Length: 221
Image 1 (spheres, rainbow, N blue to C red):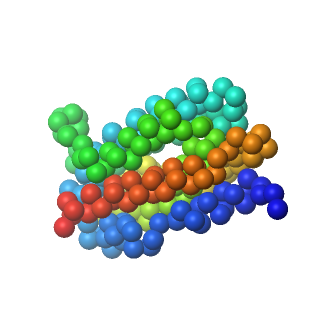
Image 2 (cartoon, rainbow, N blue to C red):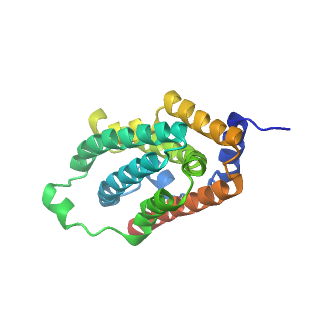
Image 3 (cartoon, helix red, strand yellow):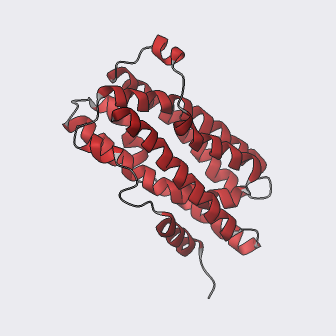
């Protein structure tokens, strides 16, 4: 039976879904038990992650000369990272971060493994394989952001502006989903989508994301 892109995206997302216990920090934030210093570190790490991911997505779009649907997907991702960077600043300010602290901050290796691997994908992976892997990973990230956004309002009294970074990633993105489906379908039709490789990339992305959160958790303990 020939798989469609929609089926492949659904099965890949389900296969790569992290264990519910794999991220103990988000439940800690959800209960309002994480310190503001932990939230500040989250903001400072994202200050490094967001521009790195944006450059990686732009590079993937530029490499996808024979995969225009994948290029369109990564162009939209890059645009989204630019918007996310703008929304990160109010969150950082609510965490007590100023420009001097941002400039002096030294990022944590465990948190920067994820964007480093995204950069590796930008250099080495087939763009369409990367579409499948990254789309599967985004499902977990969106759920984490939804929980954090709610907790910031309920337990930390952050204004809406300071929650906008997490709201942005938590909200549905039907156009991005459409572009991901188009890219994967084009890869299936042309026979150049390597599902096995894409699953391997996605597994590593999920592992590095878990490392991001567990590194922050060590600081919160």
